[in-house]
Amino acid sequence: MATANTRVGLIGLAVMGKNLALNIADHGFDIAVFNRTTSVTDEFIKENPITPGKLIGCQSLREFVAAIARPRVVVVLVKAGPAVDSIVQQLIEAGLDAEDIVVDAGNSLWTDTIRREKEYAGKIKFFGSGVSGGELGARFGPSLMPGGDPASWKHLEPIWKAIAAKVDAKTGQPIPGAEPGKPVQGGVPCTAYLGPNGAGHYVKMVHNGIEYVDMQLISEAYFLLRSLLGLKPDELSAIFSDWNRTELDSYLIEITADVLRQRDPRNKRKFLVDVIVDAAGQKGTGKWTASNALDMGIPANSIAEAVFARCMSAIKGERLIASKKLRGPTIKKLRAGTAVIEAIRQALYCSKICAYAQGFQLMREAQKEYNWKLDFGTIASIWRGGCIIRARFLQKITDAYQINPQLVNLLMDPYFRKEIRNGQDDWRKVITLAVQQGIPAPAFMSALAYYDAYRSAVLPANLIQAQRDYFGAHTYERLDSPSGEFFHVDWPAANRPELKV
Ligand code: 6PG
Image (tube, rainbow, N blue to C red):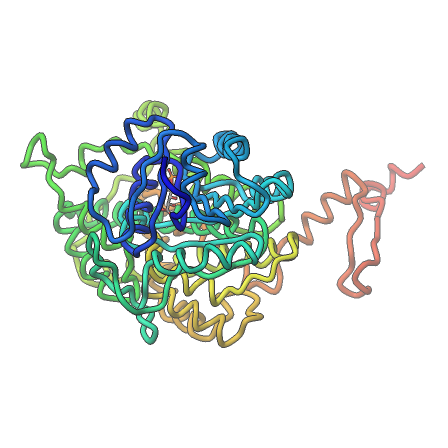
């Protein structure tokens, strides 16, 4: 039986859990680990005999709880949903008490985190933290988005700050180079306390909503380049590598360049991307973001569009049948000039700015709803490294909110206004081309629709209000009367006096 002296414990040794545990141990923290299938724990300990902090494998939850120094900090990495409640109950039965902190590091729904904090109060302290960065991020530096009771954060903070990705204090660029046993020294950690109860998990969900759009936009750029210019995947890879030296410099562009040059392991003459089925999966965080936008009445149409684009991709069977019956224009190949490539790059960049604008608009509304005080500059700054959407331009978003923390919409920031002013002719040209040639580009289009609608002083909703009043007496407001004063007209009678009785 281990003695109660490890600094922290971790439950759930799937890939993310193992890597996070090794990352914690690399930073000199002794850590107790537990997995439901105990052979996984044994193998994990055997495979990692020497780490700067000790890894203590536990065979039962009682042994696990007994191994951790008080107040116990227990990081839980199990599947979001009922498994989280089940493990919390088991931990309470195994001896966790009211002073101990359970950190849910999965992709949990923020409302579950709010509920759990209340439900377990007095038994344990429930704390939520978003973790982004995939397997490698967890191992060598993720972006961590904590939310919950500030007193609990004080116990977690040294660990979270140690293991998070680091960025250069001046440039905001990620500091690369962590190796097993040798963590990065210096730099600013990509984590910060975001707010009470579900704030961390909410911010992580919005991160994922933006991630969905980023990925959809990149695939639309790939598809347009491919369809219009007839380029091969390795040629496209070179284009994405070039783009990664521009404002688009980001993890997702970098891995896209890698993906596109990868050969099929079964047949080296082919590219792997060409044998992958074009039907995207999803685990639900993008859908949560889009449906929360609908619930709050916030226009996050590109986020919703990115989710629907995955849904459309997934009905591959129907699309195959439709492709033989529904006619559209025949694609005319263009010459592979740099102008078209640059126009597509600009379209991607402008659309990306709109996607982030929508994500931040959502967080602005949610903080009112949940009484949080989110610091948008800080959120952008902890996304600069470690997470899936890490990108050079997150420094610009950080700057925008530091200059003006009350910024109503990212599109109103002078830097981003200028960027869209420069790129929008190309953006419009690319969308026109896509429409003329019949190439689907839903996220490009929805982002432009967002931009054009947001900058419109007048929208056709006056007509909608008139229609609503016509058929349902829903009333309308007048431009020449104070807001809040409602009018109704007997439309059929006004138009057709013969109906008047
Ligand atoms: C991250 C990712 C991660 C997410 C996967 C899969 O930030 O590390 O967002 O949390 O679970 O990317 O998401 P989908 O299966 O929904 O694409």
